[in-house]
Image 1 (cartoon, rainbow, N blue to C red):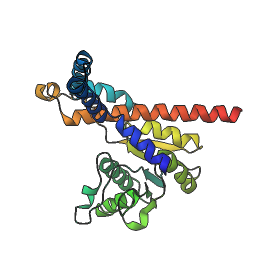
Image 2 (cartoon, rainbow, N blue to C red):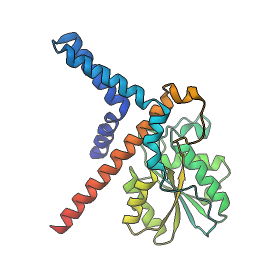
Image 3 (cartoon, rainbow, N blue to C red):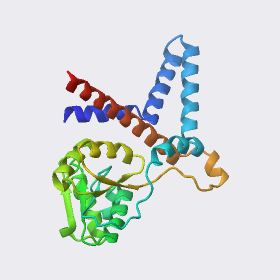
Length: 260
């Protein structure tokens, strides 16, 4: 658990906004309290410029699009017993509408899962994700949203112990065995998730949700004005790139250990 929290802390600090704010803080400290004026000016200027660029749609979506292009929206009709929806960001407030408790990428994953459930009568929806600082697990929170959209509780399975994608794959393996299943997660996260699942000998069918990189025409002001939304797109690109690097590093270390 400690390693998991440490990984999340370091990962969050490496996201564009926290990292650039830290660099700006360093630059301001140099300008105010040291003689390193030129260094402070350079760091502050570059940090500001990078924050601006990462907040522009053409740049943000150019970074994100390659991560989302591996798999197309699933429109198949082959028989499926399980639809696995991976967990994401959430909170829990019983006074809110159920869907309001799913944050960022989580709600599009659940709604895509429900769409696929309706297209495959007799299937089961599987929600994954453990408990964080909330009274309910990520899986239970997502399941409540699915129930509010008409999915009966008898068709819902919750895997509430996993804390990350690798653990989700391990828990799903115990449930589905060797039979094919639909794997629903964000389009930018899906390639990394597929690696974890196939490494265990599973047979996931990719079903991307929550595509973010915009390729359709936009108004000129949407393309040239910096936006927190597009900064979020850049953040997803950085997050998944770091995730893939970590995944490859772990895989290389495991292979080296096995050879020894």
